Length: 155
Image (cartoon, rainbow, N blue to C red):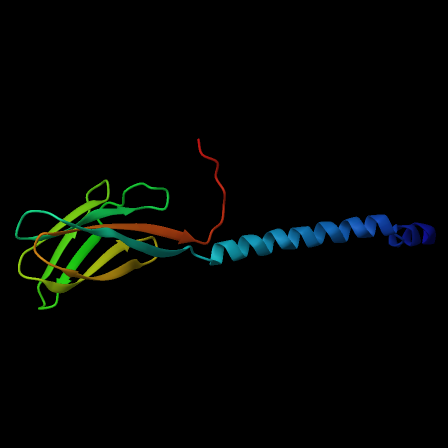
């Protein structure tokens, strides 16, 4: 009987190494899963203006698109243009992410604010421009996601 107890306690170094390696790998997988569950993706909105073109008319035009990171349009995003004298125009994007705001009046400093509701919060981007009657400004906003780095192949 004494011989069986001694044999059970005596493990080979190879078996001990294997058991430690499996335990460490399991702990690493559990730590990764817990970390992934506790982190949320971070969103930013990258907004660019492709330039100002002139058109006939007495209104300034702010138009463009709001896009997901993959290029799909973001529907129901809010676009607000505030003029220096407190006049504000608000519109929402359509299903393809397109919007257009017509602004009357004279030349004025304007603040263009694009807001997108994500899973966790509302993400905003603001641009400042001098807009005059006859100006047409093309604004493109793209939602950028950071975090949750899981690669999914395209189908």
